[in-house]
Image 1 (cartoon, one colour):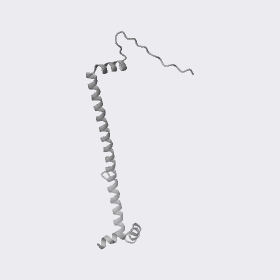
Image 2 (cartoon, rainbow, N blue to C red; image 1 turned 180 degrees about the horizontal axis):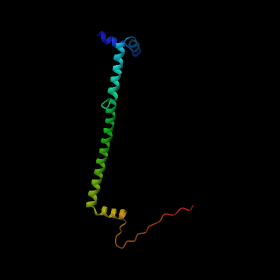
Image 3 (tube, helix red, strand yellow; image 1 turned 90 degrees about the vertical axis):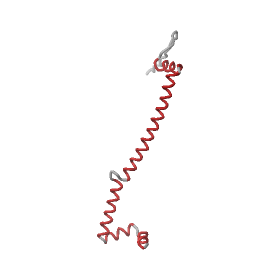
Image 4 (cartoon, helix red, strand yellow; image 1 turned 90 degrees about the horizontal axis):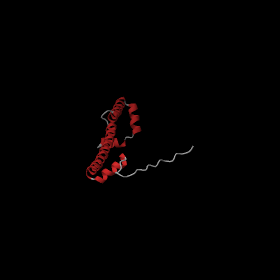
Length: 114
């Protein structure tokens, strides 16, 4: 308990002052900060882990978006395979097809005079 009470009463500035006076304590503090930096910033450190977690959640979101897009496309395929009205709509809109006897009128946009 005495040790815990000592630790609670130590401030950062008093720790630095005592480290200046004691070579052994200075070496321990330097080693501690070095290890802290290594644990935070190395390849398997906390910072790398956090960035990988963020990348993972981003990729999971992309997967969910791709799945929903896939479901929409599957419904569209099923609709195109089974519904003749949908087939006719696509043929008219995307391929410019017409029924026999129909006439197509194309309207050209007005050209701007400069």
